[in-house]
Image 1: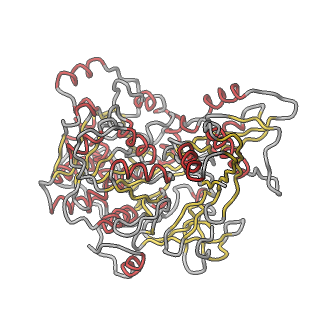
Image 2: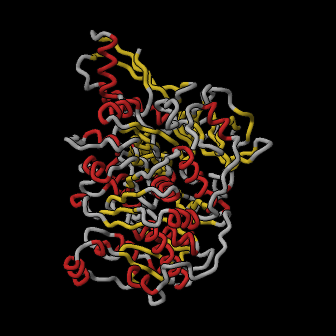
Image 3: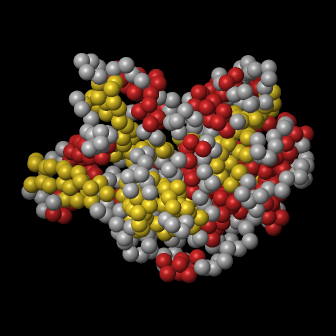
Length: 636
């Protein structure tokens, strides 16, 4: 596999023809199993304190389980275009469900942290026929959530339950079975034990004939939606295969490596970057506890886990890197660890430098989105890494910066370093959302090709590297978790005292951004932040979306045509946040923060001050308190 060392090499490489790729995700895993049947495909440990006790399966066993799972789904009535939804933590059965579901029909991921009614909305939008979910289990509320909404999903016929107790010893498993109570379910829905029922189905081969076309829908991923129906992105088999291949191609690994997965499998990163990528290239995936990085003791024992399993790569978000930076390494040998992938949210320059300097691990920062399957660009493994950039477009995937008008119509390509909208096309790009109403205005036609409008503001430098400078679509990214402002604004707007509401992001050192809201009350009415926050907690479905603060203004800033001007509110949040932190520097008595739009950097904070410190001392002091933010700043 060619090593990519510069943009020139990448341009030349893109002109090479694509290899023959598997037609489906099933075929990709089948190929690995046929070539390396005895190689370990998956290692799973249930608890961080017992990280050395792993459940291991070979590639042949992985294929066997996917065969049996797909056959079981077919036996329960799932057909090519039917949907199997999974609401599960990270378990081996989750992996079997994803690829078995894509083989027999369509797999649909749901975040177990969502509220019950939101889960029901997604299942109805996906027309769920079979649900695979967690059985009642101590310290988890998944079954309680699911059982409360079963009468709201008319297409549902079967529930398959999975219990983590299967990975405990006989005695704990037996005790749990005796003490766990099951909730009532509708008479029209069968509730079956996944691990018992699967034994009735063949694992040697698929028991049904299905010719999967690469353009067939493989999976559904929920990305939000505020028009009454959830916004569900459809991925084809070609989308997933091509995106995994682009990562295989970018790394060109000649020997077996071990990938650690701590990100959830309801997210595309888990399924593609730490799932299909290593499986397609016959590497080993280490699945660390059902809760991944959130699991008790996982991050605290991370360096020990790396040493024990000889981990080569792990995928992360900035909050994970920040936490690991604070975990003191003792005598662990982590020489096997080559790269940390980081995406989902911007990475501050300070965290980037501090992490690499402290751990000696190379960070590869990238960029992706659900509509682009997962990974769309990244800093090259062999070439120059530009800190703060999202790197270069992956091979045979196309990205550029476009200047659009107010109606999102194409005007022209942007000049070098000119800020515009990032648009993309190629085999990574999905065919559209499941509901037609969500597909309005998402495509851009430049006269030759159709491009997907990412909604992200960015620029492309003279070397071809892309830089994010803002988000036109106004998403709030909290610790790598995307929050649609509408999911905050719509519920709050129903408050009888609120006339207008705007949700935006506040900079946060650990999470990158946190949601806050500004409201304008109706004339002659008064309220308090406490009262509005209580209303928000009760009515906003997604816990992560509940604003940390709600500010009451006499008037919200408006554009010339009467729309809320959110950039003014964003500037206000940056200014207030920075000024609060600068106040902790005792040597600075007089300072001023101004936030403006910079032609290359987007929103930029300019700090002016008079003090007795010299320039180097002042810079160090300011970097110490502001460097962990992703908002760029300069000192005058």
